[in-house]
Image 1 (cartoon, rainbow, N blue to C red):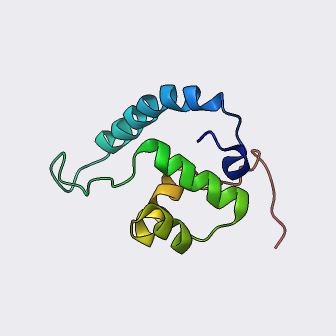
Image 2 (cartoon, rainbow, N blue to C red):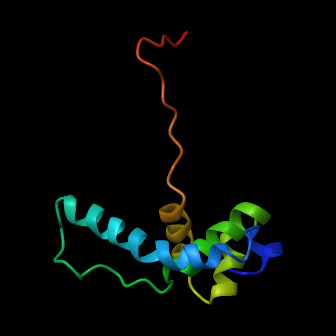
Length: 105
């Protein structure tokens, strides 16, 4: 995380990432517990990448446009693991329209 040329972040961000990692994971766990479950708690697939690795993969993907296949080779995981990690760290962008907004057809 401390290599600025790779992530675009300053070295002082490493402390912030270490502090935010457990909070992010707790929020993610709470989101999973709030929805109806199809499987028992703990039955889902285990993460092969920790929070810092998921964040690093997302930053490298966004900054350099590295494909998920290349990142999968770099982290020695399957491409689908990288795809899931990027999707979790970078939520989908949504277009919010103000109330009363009319769309031309």
